[in-house]
Length: 187
Length: 239
Image (cartoon, rainbow over all chains, first blue to last red; front, side, top):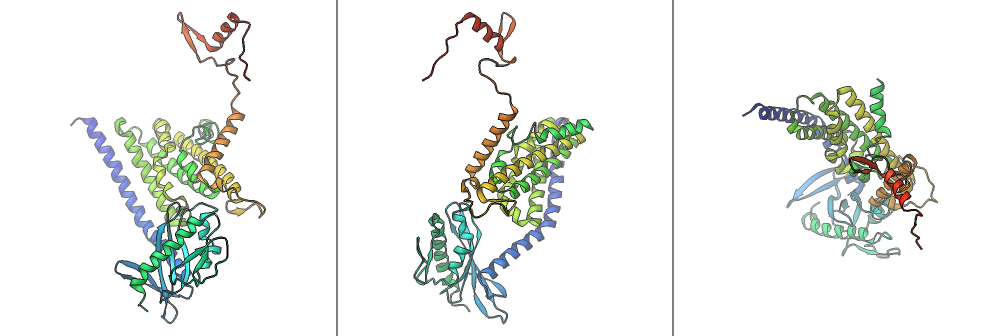
């Protein structure tokens, strides 16, 4: 092996090793903080969609993850879970809170969306979100356009962002159905 | 000292990465929907630019020519990953807003371009001042772009509301189209004010021309000869 090839190998390997080593150090330092932020965001979202909850415990059954909200006397106040599905541009991920009998929603919070700013991203705003508080999910969530909803299971779609609004409704209906099979009888 | 300042200054305006060299367009267009995002992206890029300039310039005699690009990429990727972890650990909202564009700094041609074209050929002090100047110029350009788009698209600047309720936000400014429109107009304005207007056919410059009988004839001379031969000049009329 001639010396220039050897030098290339040595230099590139050394750079790679130093880089890998320092990144391992940075990762070790930053991982606990990143994990802490993730858990804090999760906790905030759960308490947001289950306003009565003071603490929560994680549930896992049939491969479905959910969070059981508990009040200060450790009574179950509802179930929170993540629901995701396709929106207008990409995935919409939401935290959903529902009562133990899976009859009425307690709240909804969008965790991730990249819908059109100014139109579809209004699904994040309180005007739209608050419609889901106390919304009946029986037989399923419906929507109306350009007028106030008159049934207890209906919401009003955002003007000029019907696709995003309907995407939210569809994701909720699908995920609630899926979760109710597993978690309805609990608590 | 004056040389160092000169290297710093050129990145601010004369050789500005965004408005003049048009380097690193991916983050420029993608994350400038608010001034805050522009600032964060600019600072992250400047950090990577500065750190990689120091390392590339220090190691410039050690790295063999054949593997230099691979070495630069490893060095750059290391600092990008550090910046990414730092933002995720310390500033989660900004990390979330910038999304995949922080890891993408690795392939930002501004950084590889400066490493290859400058740091690998100059000493540490000169490379640092070049990187600082380029980084400041890049950050400034991103803030200007993000500021204009945020004001027109959201009525605010650095998330502080500037325009009242009478203002109907131009949503297009927050969408990718707004980035292209703003950048195009800005570059157009800058060229309009900094470049001398060239009247076509009269002053093509001294560099353009052809070789005739061993003599270099510039375009200006050729045009003069052409006018003498073919007068009166027939100009085309367009209806």
